[in-house]
Length: 105
Ligand SMILES: [Zn+2]
Image (cartoon, rainbow, N blue to C red; front, side, top):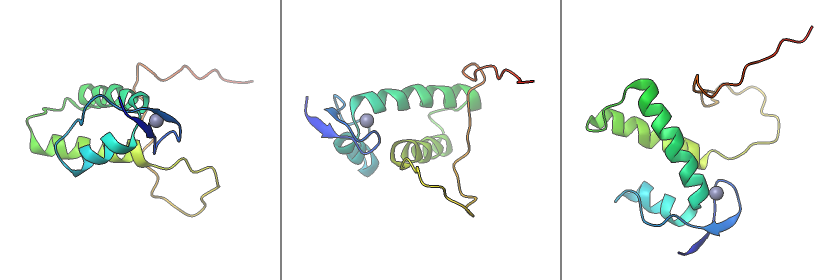
């Protein structure tokens, strides 16, 4: 398996076993995303499918997932404070994964 320097986590790791989609995005993911980050996306994708009840034969659902995938894999980790932007991706946490938030008194 080829090593890739991952665009998402920045580590040089094993890449995914095969190109997931026969399109440009699939090729970019294959060449630039490590197997670990790809695995994380697959979990996230499954949660999105469950959450929204997506039908993968629906072209709109496919388009939606492609967009989500692109954001997930290539949203740079921005450590600098970005003030004045309201274009953040939605901070969506699956209900069964959200940790309980203890209230401080
Ligand atoms: Zn990675």
